[in-house]
Amino acid sequence: MEIVIAINRGATKWDIRKKVWDYIEANNLANFPRPVHNRIPNFKGAAQACNQLSVLQEFKSSCVVKVNPDKPQEQARYCTLEAKKTLLVPTPRLRTGLFNKITPPQGASKEDLRVCSTSQGVRDFSVPIGLDAKVKVDLIVVGSVAVSEKGYRIGKGEGFADMEFAMMVVMGAVNESTVVVTVVHDCQVVDIPEELIESHDLTVDYILTPTRVIKTGCTHPKPPGIIWSKVDADMLEKIPILKKLRALEQQAGKDVTLKKSPEGGEKADRPRREPRREPMRDPKRDLKGPSERPKEGEPKEVAGHEGGSVPEPRAASQASVTTVYLGNIPAGVRVSELKSALRDQEVVPLRLTWQGAQHRAFLDYGSQQGADHALAALEGLSIHGHTLQPELAKSQRGNRRPRQAHQRRPKTSANTSAAAPDNTTGAAVTAKPKLKRPTPQRKVENLPPS
Image (cartoon, rainbow, N blue to C red; front, top):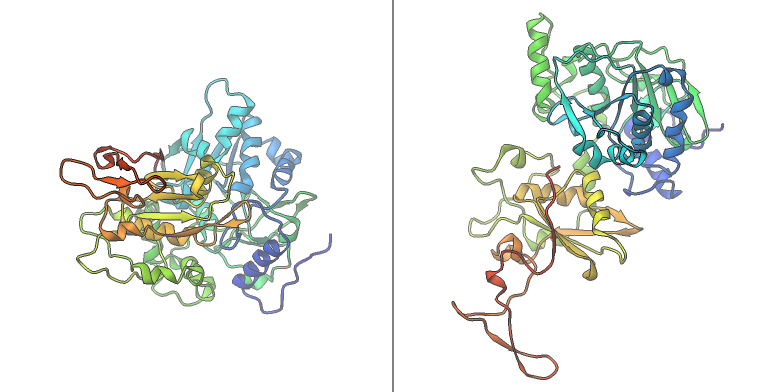
């Protein structure tokens, strides 16, 4: 099959990513979430590509299969469960561990297995696997942004798939012979120069597309373990489990010296994820109120969210903005669709106030940093072809509590509510004492943490 995306000579990994993302967007080849930039694309035909797993002898003979948690590989997770194999899924961004085992309910139906295969199902029906667990992974399914018929793979640029494999090598769960499969759209199969592939890059043995099964015959070695000289202190802080693995390797007498500078390799040629999204941000945000530094006493995991540019300090007299207003929600969108989109973006709020009739919702994250992180992640997000409009909740900047962020309240005395004239008759209408209610009179969804 002819390659449809030509790669220019001297292109970097980031050049290739951008070319693939641009092509998918320009030709409308992806499903939600959009845009596909900075993501593993949820391409159209992903389910058909995942179904190709069943033709692989290596899959048929496997017992334990690890599949990445992205949306385009959802059908691969279902196929694994339906085949009654053990399914392992990496912990999102490796925040709390390496991977979880999906445990469907007793006597699960096919519909139950489909639920278990979703991002919510992965959260609800999984148990963590410890570093000391004796696990042998037979086959791995990963997503890709681009891949070559020679087996060279390019991810979205954060290195999690490469690091997951290296960490599993340290655990003894995988080795050089472990089969690695990637699932992509046909257009994502491109020519990747061999010189771009480094020792820590994960290569693949099979490529599954909606129309083809490609056996790469790749001879480039897979990562032999964690290459500590390519790990910096920043990554060590973001992935806590790395600290444990480093201590184990140090006890075993291995060199665990960390990288001291970002010079060289891919890290030097690509921008960080959030700064790339920064130009898309609404310029009105800076006029409506700059971000605030984390308050003392806030949990470290909230104050330490990954972000783009450093927020400007807020005046001491101003209140922290913890709520994000999400506008331009198209008619017909259900609250469940929005919640699914938030989970895919990994920005599930502590509290969601839904106002679908007004094409808006309010997301409370409980902290300034959480709201800022969500604001950056939601920029450019679209549902049903409509780009949503996220911004910090305006009225909360007026020192109101989060639940008062968007509600106009009548002026009242300390004990009674004020009467306001009716807009049409001029009759006095007694306002409801909303301040005394525990929650606003709107549909409110309390969501589990991401």
